[in-house]
Length: 155
Image (cartoon, rainbow, N blue to C red; front, side, top):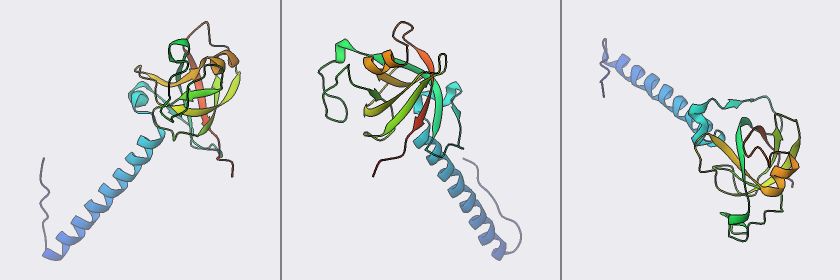
C-alpha cells in the first residue's frame, strides 16, 4: 500500500489527514449501504436499483423457485418450508421482510415473506416458493427476470 506524504507546514499535515479520513469514512458508509441493499451474488452482474421508491429499495435481477425437495424442511427463520405458502429466500434482506416480486415478462406480481436464505446460484437474486412462482407464472420457465420491492413493515 502506498503512502501519502504531506508537504508544507506541520499544521497542513493534520488538515490533510483529516480530509483523507473523512473521504475514507464516506466511501465506507456508501459501500456499507450498497452491501446491505444489493445482494452479494449479483453486484457484478448488472443489478439495477431504483432509489426513488417510497416503500423501500427496488432491485431487478433473476429469480428461480424451489419446491418438493425442500418441502417440510426448516428454513433459515426456523419455520418449516411449505411449498404452497407465498414465501421466498433472499441472501440478505432481514427475515420476516415482506417484498413484492414482479415478473417483468408478464407484469404479474406477488407479495412474499422472506423466511429463508438463498439462492445459492450465481446471478440470481431471489428463490421463490412453488406457490409464489405459480402466482407470477414462472413455473415452466424456471428462471425469470423480476423486480423486488421491499414493502414497509406493518406496525
